[in-house]
Amino acid sequence: MKYKFSGHETFACRALWLKKGIDYVLQEKAFNSEESIIDLGVGKNMVTSISFWLKAFGLMTEDNKLTEIGRSIFSEDGFDPYIEDIGTLWLLQYLIVKQEFASIYPILFIDYRKEKKEFTIDSLKEYLELRLEKDQFTLNPKSLEKDIRVCFKNYLVEKSSKTNIEEEYSNVLLDLELIYKIPRTENGISFYQLNITDGKRVPKLIFLYCLLDFIGEERAINMESIEKLLGGAFAITKTGIFQIINELTELHPDKLVYTEDGGLKQLQLKEDLDKDAILREYYNGK
Image (tube, rainbow, N blue to C red; front, side):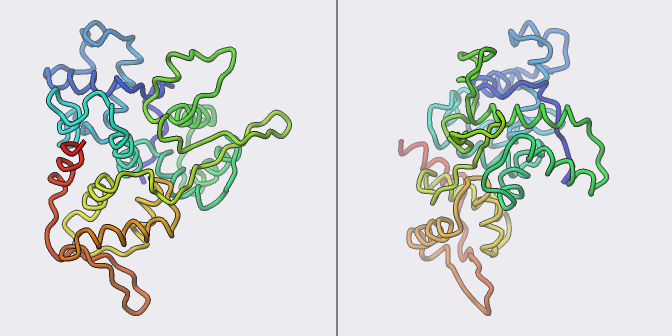
């Protein structure tokens, strides 16, 4: 993984920023232009942050070109430009973990999940510091802690005297409730936990789209890989992943087949499934 723990200028992603940023790119304007502050109606640091989040969610490439999924969801005639559907939030969650542009998301939901059931900001920070030291990656500890706090702000609101409630409640991934604060403290230190479930909260067609996107051009994929990325991104148990895969193979028996051979558990794609058609089916059926 190419580590990146900065670029958001300590701003969590606000829900309307993604649409605002997509519109700006569609107008063929540049985030580093002098007019960007006026055009977007935000400060210079927020302009930088909007650009960062578009890339982190895989909606824009590193050379500032919109991706297919960015256009499909957030263009004026897109499926859900104002993020009114919970399925869009799950799709964004998959994308930010899969992209690995913002390193803390895949690390937290895939790797750190296996380490601790409960954690604090300090314990997560210590885990990251040890990992980065092992990989010979140098980062200011304060920058790392800021990145952790920004990540948490995308998922939960922590009320305090300094909290701007209007701003905090506009952060994009809050409704997924993937991180929650445990009702206990030790020496004033708060504890957190990932909200790991059986995955029934994730719309099946959104899960299928993400699965097909993950499979790509391959005709088979092992279940361990599915458990790692999709189970990680969506915080789903191993049993939950198998249940969802079983339901999908029942829905598409001629195209998706689950096999076990010599201990190797695989999902095979016998015939093409058009992921874009699956996405259209989800949104058009709402």
